[in-house]
Image 1: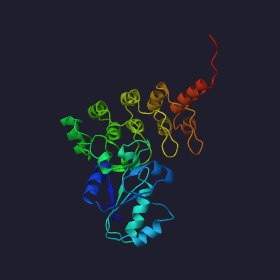
Image 2: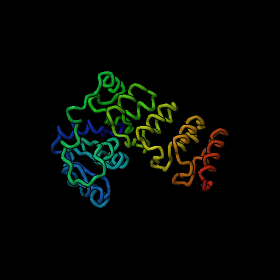
Image 3: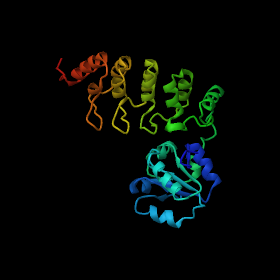
Length: 277
């Protein structure tokens, strides 16, 4: 339960919560086109033109569950329903992206289609213990926790090599992002271990992924003065020419002379035209 008195639920927790409350009002705070393409079965699209009617006509004793794209807007809506006197309100940490359903058009998605993993996904005992000790669901190695971080992100952030290897072996989703829009490779850069960065890139975690502000892992590393991480990312092919929403590149953000020199060289190299042999 948060300070504002609504509950923030992971995907696994939300599945159990909804199963126990079949009468819950499920609200989808995404755009109309995305709701039309795919949505939780029985959900009602929540938007500025109908929220007042919902607030005033729905019984305040009825449980309310809200999801959006990544778990940001849902918090605003949840606070509104809570402030209006609804007794039981919950929202989905990580939003639609946390359900692991992808972006394929599929219409209504029944509760059974996004529950715990199917039988046959065997989580090694050591990994299950680690997941539980870190606050994750030991039976769902792909399920996000606090701030939308998945176990893979958390292992990368902590530099937990055995857990990282086991999660990758289980083929957990590699394109998941947390509530800031950062992926596992970004979190590996926060820790700074080059081998883990190379490992995630080799398995296919997008190296030039940009978060919700348009910042890439290379920009983060440059702005943090992490020359070793900048060198590692550049060696893996990270693009130094990408810019944020404010039109800043990694070179603009370089916080140390070493980072500046690495990025100047990489930028110049990429700008030079190729010559025929």
